[in-house]
Image 1 (cartoon, rainbow, N blue to C red):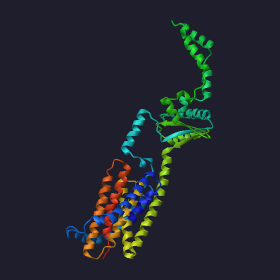
Image 2 (spheres, one colour; image 1 turned 180 degrees about the horizontal axis):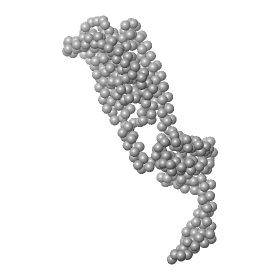
Image 3 (cartoon, rainbow, N blue to C red; image 1 turned 90 degrees about the vertical axis):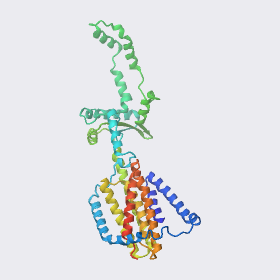
Image 4 (cartoon, rainbow, N blue to C red; image 1 turned 30 degrees about the horizontal axis):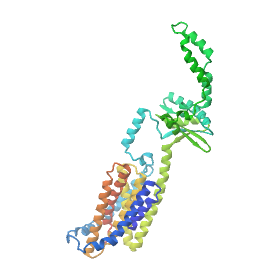
Length: 427
C-alpha cells in the first residue's frame, strides 16, 4: 500500500492539474480500500483453505524454473539501456500535440478544415503593444504593411487585424480628409457624366453622403457593440493597467521564421511574435523535468520503504533488479512502438514502479512452507491480472492521454510480474 501511495503521491506533486486530480483520487481510493480490506472484510469472510488444493502448485514451480532466465533478462535490460541511451536526444515529445485530448488524425483534419475556410491559426500570432488603443492601432497598421508584402510573396495566405475593422483615428481622419469637397465632387461628376445620358443632379444624395462622412466622428469599439464582429474585435484587444495589446492573427503561414525575420527587419516599435506552440513546448519540457524529479524522488522513496521492509541483501538485490529491468524494458518497448515518449508515459512509469515493487516484495520473500508459498503466488497473480485487465482496457480509450497511461501501465505490469518471478527468492 505504501509503495502504491508513493507512486500516486508523485503524480499529485507533478504540477499538472489533471494528474494531480487523478493522483488524489487514487490515494483516497487506495486508503479506503486498504482500511476496508484490513478491518471490514476479515470478519465477513469465512476462513477457508486455498481453493483447488494443489491446483496452483505449478505457480511456485514456474517461478523456480524462470530463475534460469536471470542472465538473459539482464542482457535484455542492458540492450534496452543501450537503446534508450542511443535515442535519448529525441526520445521525449514535448510538442503541444502530446497534451491534446484529440487524436493526430483529428488534429490533422481540424487544421485542414481551418485552412479551407480561412480560419486563422491561433498557435502563432503577432502582438502589437501601445500605451493606448490609438497607438496600438497605429503600430498594427504599420505591421500590416509588412504583412502585405508577405501575402504578395505567398509566404502568408492572409491575416486578421483589428485595424481592418477599427482603423486608428489618425488613419480615419486622413481618409476623411482625402474625400473631395462637395463643389469639387460636383465638378468631377459633371465631367464624368457629360458624354452620357446620366444627369449630374441624380448624384446629389451621393455628394451629400460624402459630405456627411467628412464630418462623422471616428469609429470606436462601441460601434460594434453587441455584434459578432464586436466580440471578435474584443478578443483581439487586450487592455491592462500599463497599456493595450492588439493581436494580429495569421492565416496559412508557410514559414513562421520568415514572418518573424521580416518583422524584425522592419524594426517596428511594440511589435513582436507570439509562438504559442513553441512557448507551450518549453512549458511542457519544464513540466517534464519537474515530473522527472518527482518520479526519481518517488522511486527513491519506494526503494527506501522496500529496503526497510526487507532488510536482506539478497532480497534488496532482487527488488532492485526487478524494478530496474521492468522500467528500462517497458520504456524501450514503448519507444519502439511509439517512437517517442510523452510526459504521461513518464508519470505512468512511476505507477509501474509501484506495481512492480508490489510483486517483487512478495516474490523476493517467498515463504518456505509449500501452502504459504502457493497462496502468495496465487495472490500476486490475481493482483497482477486485475491490474493488467484494468489498464489494458484503459489503453483502448478514445482519449489519447488515458490510452497512453493504460498502455504504459499494462505493459509494465506484465513485464514487472515476469521480472519479479525471474528474480524471485531462491529459498
